[in-house]
Amino acid sequence: MTFSQVWTWFVSHAIANPVSLIGLALAIYFYFKNRRFKQLVYTSKSANFVENYENKIPNLRVLFNNQQIRSLTLTKIALWNKGSETIHGHDVADTDHLHLKVPEGSQILDVTVLQISREAIRFRTSCVHGNSRVHEITFEFLDKHDGAVILVTHTNQRAPSVGLVGTIKGAKAIAFFPNVRAPLTRHSIGLPTITISVGAAGISILALLDSAGGIKGPLIVIGFFVLQYFFTTFVFEQGVRIRYLPRPLNRFKEPI
Image (cartoon, rainbow, N blue to C red; front, side, top):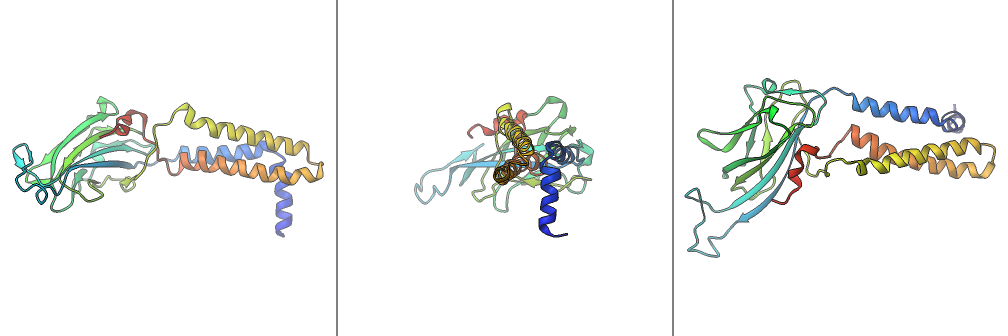
């Protein structure tokens, strides 16, 4: 079968029938939406407040809890369960606990939990005795989009400032999202919804003008661009690579 024959069949069957295209789009959307997996993800942003002051002001001393420090950085972290399956506390491997960690030569001075998605998850952080580079994280469970916003005070000046490491049994590897968008709102999904509606209307018009000759080609091109936008902004972004901050963790967007 030649390309022209395949194209002719696609135009006469799929393009001329908007119901089939809408059905295909919905099938792909619900496939990604109903995938069962669990994955802990996190994002962070940092602000350095004290660095390299000793050479500039020799007589200056900066203390934190009566301890002299040479640098001071604040890192805000948001972490949450991106998957559709619940992560239970006992899913964390005993041999590789979930913890925050800074590089060699740095230390964590303080960790404050700014926000949790809900009290029921019992999200906690605790220092590890004898290791100032590590702070352990525990929780009862994390349903989809459950998590917390944490403020870490530390002495590391390099990026990434603080890492989230550990092993969760039966889950995908912990992933870092360098950039996240604000929580989804009605306005966030309004444009894709309008787009698919316009696309469906254009395909319907194309079917009605099937015998109109020259107008058919441009309408096909427009229809494909509309459908491409729908898939890239609505189906794939929602189903494959969600980079939206869950609504219960909106304090992450506040300035440090």
